Image (cartoon, rainbow, N blue to C red; front, side, top):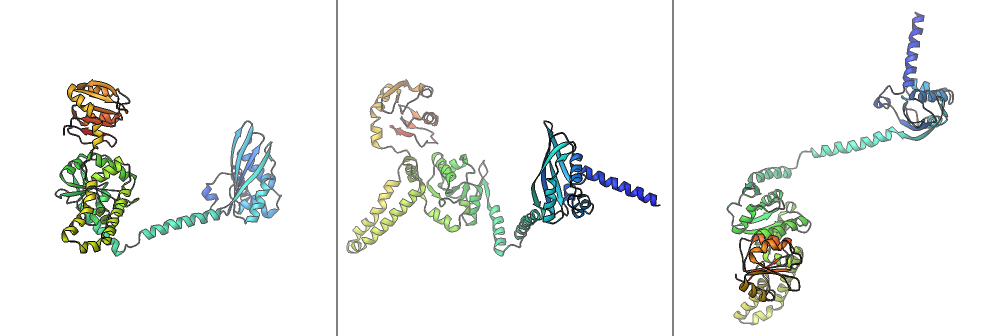
Length: 460
């Protein structure tokens, strides 16, 4: 019986020794389960050695060095030191690697063991050097994880709280608004339920903008859904009174410019600078729509004078304030004057901005058409097209029938004068060549007018 016990002890001892020499028998999770600290070290050996050589050197050269209480074999038996993990790689006849030692000792004892590793000067037959890189406190890492995870759990818990009565009401209203939303035209554009029969419509950028306007009782909005203006919007603009209502950012400005070029827009309104229509309150929406400006004024001020939309609004407000101040200062005079004179005083300020605001989109000053007069008379007689440079010198004269083909290969052309019909195709070609003036007899089927091209007709 005693002999059997001795054999069993011997087998277990050999098994433990083999596991120690292997050094990688357990996963990181098993090794670090009760670990407080982890010692990270690196080594370099002047020769080719293997993993068991390194593990053997660690146990062999520290044995008896620190006394029985800090003997690595005893500490590993009692589970206070975990499996020592070693990774090696060989390069140019030398061996490099890392050593990881999990420890459940206190910080002082762990530091002593780490320092003991640096006393090892040989691994197998080769000279070696071990350097401790750092000692990591596993509990600090766990605490950091606990804090971050607790934040996530708390956030999730707060999001799942029972909603307020107002939130429930908003959810119900939102569902109703979504049902009111319709799809209009072949492009299935998001629109309010009044768009099919309303005399006036509001053109906005996207679906969210339409929903926000529906939320506040405005049911005649339709979205362009992108930077390319759909044919449905262009067609509607010819039949209805259109107000373009865009965001107060760069994207809103680009869409507005595109709308003004391809559609027949009557008024322009914009969200407050830096805001989007979808996030506006009812008060902000009403205020923006009340501050709308006639499209003709916006085109003149923005495209030809290069001014910002919000500067135009500020100027308009300043003019209104000045008129109000003037009216207050002149009030005593109005009381003394006859009724007829009072009526004239009231009409005069209103008439002045009307003349400045309402003007044709492509209106050209008389002086500009006059400078082309001699060329216009010439093309009427000779039925040719004249190409001019910036100094009004004739570059070339070509037959009208060859104008489209010949102009494509020409550079430095400033103006084109011909006795013919200005078409959309000709406008596109001329605009691509950077030509500034296009002078013809009349226009036909023109839907897009480039910003930097002035069109003059002499027979319309």
